[in-house]
Amino acid sequence: MSIGLREGPQYTRSTALIQYPFPFLMKQSTPLPTPARDRTSVNDHSSDRRRSHARPATAAVRIAHSSHAPGGARTGRGQRRWVAKLRSLCHSAWRHALPTQCALCGNLSHDVLCDACDEIYWNEARLRCPRCALPLPRNVATHCSFCVQTRPAFDATVTLADYAPPLDQLVADLKFRSRIELGRDFARRLALASQDLPELPDALIAVPLSASRLSSRGYNQAWEIARVLARRLSVRADPRAVVRVRDTGQQALLGTTARHANLAGAFALRKTVRGQHVGIVDDVMTSGTTLDTLARMLKDAGARRVTNFVALRTPRA
Image (cartoon, rainbow, N blue to C red):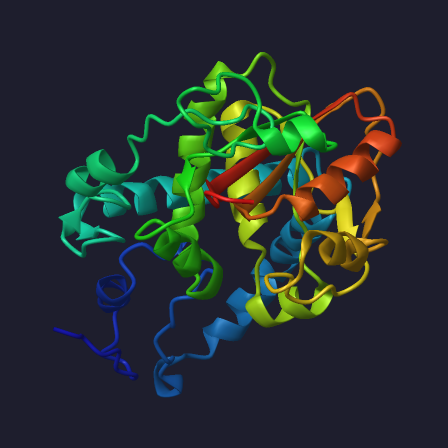
């Protein structure tokens, strides 16, 4: 039942507390309305009281807003961080207390996927090429034929599963339907899969979008994975380390040679990576041309090692 706020002398702050039980959890604090003062009830002594308290109030305001107040700015930032953490904890508790729908089957679940879908689709035991993550035949125990013939610039690839139904729907929901929680789930799983790596990267970068596509979509799905993965791996991540300076359009219908030509000069490096192990994060790895182009640029800038972190990998290059 919604309780409306009525104006007038009968309004009380308890009414406002019913409407706004936790105002400090709001992103922008909503000031509580104050009851209108009945001017007929104000006596002549009110002006004397205002004059008598004017000087201390003015002094207090000067002290509160003075840039020389000790710790004032730090206290404000600390309070904002505390409120942000409290809000995040409340949202997390709310999400775990109330079940949501499984992203695949639609059944009630306290996580992104229900236990049944998680058991069926994510527990894939498949032999993959350690460099490009292509599935390997059972009789091949080293690298795939593609990496043997044409060695890519990157050194390793971590992936979760093949880009195939129904898991491909998760990528589509993240990319086109603003299901940001799927990016967090991809990051969590990639962090677990990264435990077998010989070494973790020093920093993570996300495959950048063009300015027009980022503006129309509102977010970069690769960065939504990278920022959470960096926190779980305790490494750095910078969304501005690599930028896309030219819109390359869709590459799905292009061949390998045409893809490399289309990506020539499309990226620019804004940070120093000399001597570092850099991780590149993306949602899907198809032919690996984009990742190879970025890895080559990083290696030319002095990067020591490049590892790809991709949620899904197409079964064939």
